Length: 392
Ligand SMILES: *Cc1c(COP(=O)(O)O)cnc(C)c1O
Image (cartoon, rainbow, N blue to C red; front, side):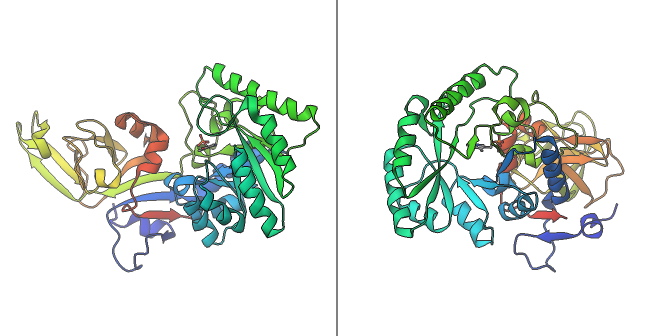
């Protein structure tokens, strides 16, 4: 196997600012922009025609690279992008993204002038924020759109559903603001039991009915995340907020599948060393693995310092499409794997830590299981020191 497969077979761009002639670290993340675009096509084909898309690209697009993903999302015809803080929004604006951006969560007072100046749309859930935004909007002399965040039971952000109508009336009385959207957020939308999701939906619809009673029109009514988009078509309204699904990962094992959706991110490395060990020899810090028989150990130059889960004698990597189990614990910069059953394995050949190789796959959910966590945490948990390679 060639030692520079990636260079030869794919056009690549490197995000890290590394000069193009300096050798790349033998451990990296691959982001398949072609697959990302295919996922957008599939989602666009799947959704009903008038349904608007808001793509959630917070936390560097779930670790895939905020600006790269935002650009692909714009080509896919997205209505809104969404982020969770001002720094993320400024990074996209600085990168030339001038589409609508909805900022999730709460804003500190000092952030509001920036939001108005940068055309960032805020969620509002209190009279205080409405007043402050209203004053700023008066000064700039153009109507500033806002989305009302309703708490229907998750009890994170938002005005309680029973108090929503009063706040809407307050927004409408603030002439410098434009009441553009209402949203809520599901606490559990991707499991088989939809009881609580349906209760939240009923509360949301109660508010919508109150607005309709008063002939108050809202352009964007949105409550669905990826799980809701997949499993709660009755909750789509005007727009859905899709995060995880665009990256080709499903929010749970039980939610509906859409053919054609596939993961965008893989994690790869090269074998940096071999050790031929005898029965009773141990491997790694703490001597956590003792060989039952002579074994060949491969050393992979990636560790918990890169975001690899700190597991021990559990999990595996793919070498030549076969599973090589981890032996011992994960160090900051290295893991050791048993390559005895892959005798052809060569020094510096490419192996897969997350993603496909041959007929085998290590899914984001597999890694999440090893870490006792969820797919969201795995995607966003890879550290910046791992270079991101973009395949386009
Ligand atoms: C992160 C987030 C989403 C996206 O959720 P996914 O499950 O990744 O689709 C949607 N809405 C809000 C309010 C969020 O915070």
